[in-house]
Amino acid sequence: MKNSQEIDSLAVKAKDFAPLPQDYSTWSAQKKQDFLWNERIVPSIYERKPPLAKVNTLGLIMTRLKIKMDRLSDQAPAKWDKAIHARGSVAKIKLIAEADCPFTGLFQGADYGLLRASLTGDPSRDNFAPGLGIKLLVDAQDSGNFSALVSLVGQGKNYNFLANEFSNIVPVVNQLRPKIGNLIFRRVTRYPTKISLKNLGVIDQLGNPVKVSHYPEQIFLVPTSDIQFPESPHDFRDDLETIPSGTVLFSLYAVESKEGENHLLNQSESRQQAQRIGRIETTSKFVTSAYGDRQLFFRHQRFRNQ
Image 1 (cartoon, rainbow, N blue to C red):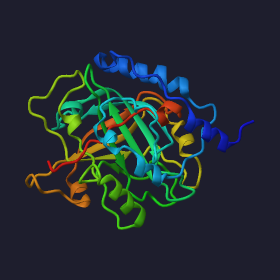
Image 2 (tube, one colour; image 1 turned 90 degrees about the vertical axis):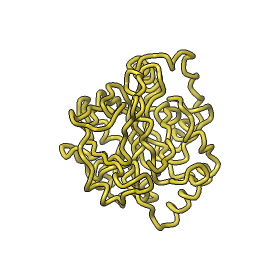
Image 3 (cartoon, rainbow, N blue to C red; image 1 turned 60 degrees about the vertical axis):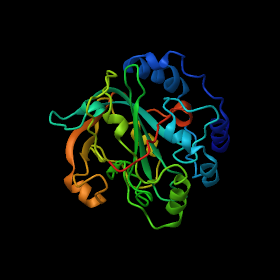
């Protein structure tokens, strides 16, 4: 019987999956979701979960970060390794908009998407630091993607994945590891702690471009109060597997800068001004899989003053 280290090694060295079909980009959002889920994610579900991986700082330095910012595909390139957020769980989702949501494009609703919940690294070596990757699929066009964190340093030793809100913008932290990470990401973006939401506002789920796009500067994902997990050390992936399909996992609150192109609200001001714009609901259970960990790809769009 293989030990956990051997299983982890096998997961890392697994062969790359075949490229996406040549006509994949022309498919409907539903067909894309069905393919990614039924042909890639589910067939590669782990028989036994690999251990959580520590942050690979050297690997992050060597990562081709321009690809992370610029690649439009839903699948990572061959030989792509995650130096951070290497282990996670994936579920199918949909975004349901509030009737008075002021933002355009996918913020008006997206019936087909994927959410990957992960940790920056192994919490037994450092803090418990949750993160989300969200992909909203679009008919015959590139998907809309964004990521969100609780903070750059996580939430201490609280192992409840849904204990805190997530956001696409997190404050700068004056600690060594976050400062090193910021320096690494500054090679490709002026704002390493901020992710742009523009790609979600310029096109709707049917692939229609928006004539006049309107998208928020910052979004907050507020976990449902109906589901909470133990704070004591355990594998967060086991918790996520207990969440039923059809669960409203997050309420969405968003805000835009109202004081000119060069003004950015601080975190506290932004949260106070945020209005509820929708919710994210699961349309499957969470699973852990080699494809979800290795090749499901979430673009990080560069943030610019909006």
